Image 1 (cartoon, rainbow, N blue to C red):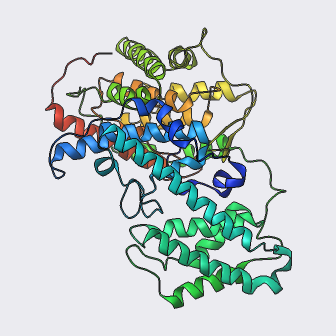
Image 2: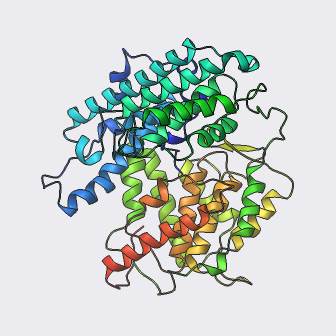
Image 3: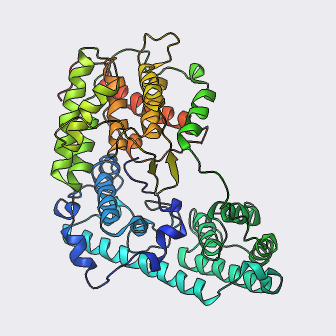
Amino acid sequence: MIVDLAPSFLSWDDVDPARHAFDDTTVEESVRSLGPARCVPVRPDIPFGDRAMSEWSHGEAGSWADAMSYALVQRYGRWAVGWRWAHDEGDFDGGPVGSWCCPRDSITTPEETLTRVVAALREWRGWLEYLAGWFEAYPLDPDDLEDQRPLWECTARNLILQVVDRTGCGSGWHGHCRQVLTWFLSRWGVAPEAARDLVDAAVDGRFHSWAGPDTAVVDDVAERLALSLRPDGGGTRSDAPVPDHLRRWLAVRGSVPWHEIPDSGADGPVVPVRDGAAEDIRAFDGAIAPARAEGMLAALKLLRADAARGARLDRTLLSSWQQRVLGTPEPPPFRRSPAFAKAGRERYGIGPETPALFDACLAESAVDTGHPLGLTARAARTYLDICFFHPFDDGNARAAFLALVFVLAREGIALDSVGLLRRVTFEADAPKDPLTLVRYIDVHLVETRRGSDGRVCSVAG
């Protein structure tokens, strides 16, 4: 939730080189000036197969790579998250980048690591510019489809083969292939959502990891895609009403079987052998900017004190933490206009009743409400409420994470790691996402109990 780090969600508007300037001559200097460049983690001198190496790669090193992605997005725009989209089973499955693999393999000395970051960013940008050249070489007119269908089909076939060659058909390569085809249709007037639907229907699950597609399959996919296009551009939806993803979330919220979710927090208080929330803040936020980490740590200390006294979660409490997070003179107020997230893909409306409705949702995080849920269900629902009510003008992902920590802490539970809670993106209208978040909390809680060996003590703020 900190930032959408997964390149598979990038749209053509996100990555179109014509919309996003990039000076290749200054990229090395720019990368080395970013906050994460000053604190590259040191790879431990242990065998790759050692469990401690895996923990380092997924912990400290993974947080650093995420922080570098965040910093690059702030510098260049959302398109830059693709720098880590490595071949095969790297940080993200089946990408076109060969200069980076994963923290374990790619983080060595600071000098070598930053050189790899620069090379990977250049490689990703070069691929986008290459694709843009292909798209522009075939300026297709959706209003003249009958004459142009053979050209659409030929272009689709060539693009599939280009992705096959660039990714090497490793794990998950077909995801990027569908994305590139979607980008092509979007470039020439097909609405992005309609383009995704057309591409998915044409591919129909016939591309597979670790296997190149047969020529006949490639030809059939290209033909089916060309035949599926309509003269209206595939449904541009320009006349569709403006979506309100807050309303969509509230509909999903009411349909989730919260009471049927097993309660992993029912076994009582647990304190980890290490403070996962604080460690993640130092590793991720601290790499971005020391002041950002200081604000988060101050809010963490405050919320744990509030949890210890059994405080009720409401807007006033949330705003008091957010004041520390953002370093503002006063607690930030509830937003006064519609909010946007995920590069504008989600819009959260607002009305006179929105703040009061938010208050009512926050109140349901307590165990002593009329229809109490299990702890992990309440923690997950509170997290998502804050994400999709989007109460503040800035820092809502951080607010959601801190509120989740608070709900657990109020019942005596802290976690020794939180990576799954800060490196994911949930959709407001996805019915399965709440259950996924509950599972992620459960994973961290089970691991924490196993490591703590049932000890009950206090966690330093």
